[in-house]
Image 1 (cartoon, rainbow, N blue to C red):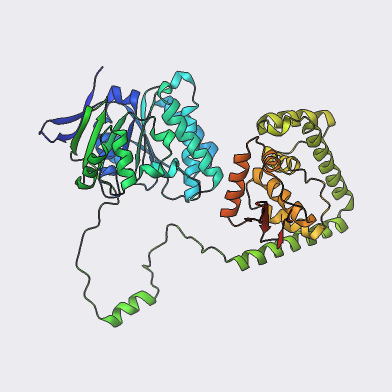
Image 2 (cartoon, rainbow, N blue to C red; image 1 turned 90 degrees about the vertical axis):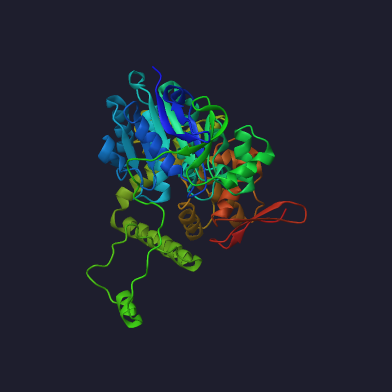
Length: 487
């Protein structure tokens, strides 16, 4: 069955349509600066196709929830945990219900994790439920960023993997990705490259114009036309729309977003004294902040907090030793057994590079044989990271090592062992470990991955890397006031 949905009009006055069945097989990329009309375009596409195909909208700003009143979409406020979101996504596919995943009340990192959990739930559903559906992701550069830095590494990795699955492998599962972005340069290339339909709107930066013209097969000198596009005008190309680039004016929509463009309106007339009183005097009608964010602490405050945490932890351990010597001894004995089991696993030279899930299965079997209760996967990751780095049996002073572990606890589990490896070298006055040693502690064979890890830790303020006159690396750990030795 062929279904053509009307998107607007072409320059010659004829209707601009999209072959919905072809769109399901070839995916769509929409690009345009803020205010170019991307949300209006997506809303037109969703409204026109709503009677024909199931829809899922990943909405970071809550702009598309108004579709629910006219077209029966179910709004999912993504405030539940990731497991619940995964289960809901599976039911969405099973019952073929159009939904809007509203992420507006979440912090950026939680937005990425929630979207990843939901997309993975739809992607991993049973084959019997692989019905055709379009998946619209607005502000796709958030969920598939071209570079790290703006978000936590774990959240970025999960979201990027989910978006890659959607665009690269989703077609066979009935998932047709429709992604919209403000800037192509900020969108991961392996995600953007899978789309074969394009709607390019107004943009001003040279790098974005050149990339847009390359995707449309246009000459570089033609890229200037992207600056001259009006709001709501897009250059269309793709098997579902047009075989050559054509300018399209997007038509009207039935529903309206909750944001919209700002409109000029006169300021209220009132005396200066009254205005000051309105600002500084609290009242019952004060607005409620929907996202209370606490200012980031200074470096001095962080250091004081780390010192207090380490001191209180040591003091608490001392109290527990005096209060329950027998129970604490048993706990210490259990930890030694667990560390010994992990050390046995890592005696295999290839074990350091195997997936954590595979090592955890081996670990659980060994724990059952030794009649020791195995910890959960998170605790195992932490112990494995330290064991991979070879710092489980460190010889540094107790208080100093406690401070190093407190600082390391603010890193993801897989990075903590690398930080402790650097801390051990700094405390012992040794040179910085080489790239291969750091890579092994991180669970990879790639020296480039090790160098990326050091750069990532440096960007987050945990270390400072420098080189001596011979080009040898020196790592300073500001939180510990230590650095590795010169060669």
